[in-house]
Image (cartoon, rainbow, N blue to C red; front, side):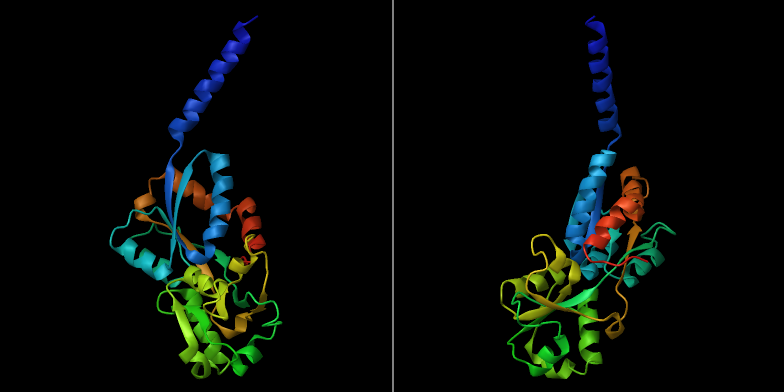
Amino acid sequence: MMIRPFLIALLLFFHILLINASAKEVRIAVATNFKTTLQEIAIHFERKSGHTTLISSGSSGKFFAQIKHGAPFDVFFSADVNRPQLIEKEGLAVADSRFTYALGRLTLWSPDPNRLKKDGPSVLARGRFNHLAMANPKTAPYGLAAQETLERLGLWTHVKDRIVLGENIGQTFHFVFSNNAQLGFVARAQVLDPKINGSGSRWDVPDTLHEPLRQQAVLLTHGQDNEAAKAFLDYVKGPEAQIIIKRFGYGLE
């Protein structure tokens, strides 16, 4: 009577060994705005697949330069379209692997619940603040969108001397969160992050004031033979991941 439980335990042991033997690691470069969202997606992916993920976050521009110089990433989640396109043209990405994983949303945010009251342009025009934070428009797509917004509102010249630039959208958010800047242009997903939970006050920037923040991912040639990398990109396209993406305030195509 003891043989059956022993056989079941033995089969379970070999099943675990088989899963571990087939499990692989995927190295992911992700734009800072999408870091928290991707981390949650990765938790569910790891539980379901047995694979592991290594996530590095930073500005899309810096990752682009690193990938061009041979950084060993398997997949790249950029905050724009241009850099994945260029990587693809230069033969550093697998053909036809590029896709839009999210539509970014820009918001003007302050930790002060009374500062904005959904009236961003008026607050910017009145200028009752010392510093306005935004990401560097040369390296960060959200920074470029912020500059385009200010230009289309006719306020760029009015506020540019009070702008403090973050290296990426994560540093920009920290400037505002720490009150080194009274308000700043950040990703809406950062404000909806469970740690912030929508606190403070914000003005969601209409999409008409800047070029679309289409965020694209691509399978890099370094990961072309990595089954975990392919599986992760497939998972991001699936319904479970898309529910998470929408919950963090992004749009989907």
